[in-house]
Image (cartoon, rainbow, N blue to C red; front, side, top):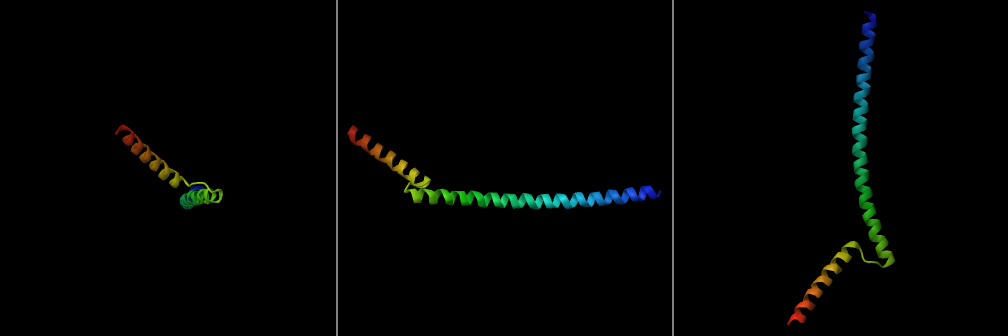
Length: 82
């Protein structure tokens, strides 16, 4: 009977360790997600800075320029057709 008590104690201790490890794992996953979000933010800022230093247009500026080019092409086609 004493052996059964010891096994129950060991089992309870293992369960406690497993619970603690699961909690720690969840906390680490949360930290990882937060760090990943910060990394993406910093990468975007880095890209903007790199474009600025090189004198290049940023991604947003390129999209605006493409839109303006399409508008001008459409206006030119309208003028040619009249």
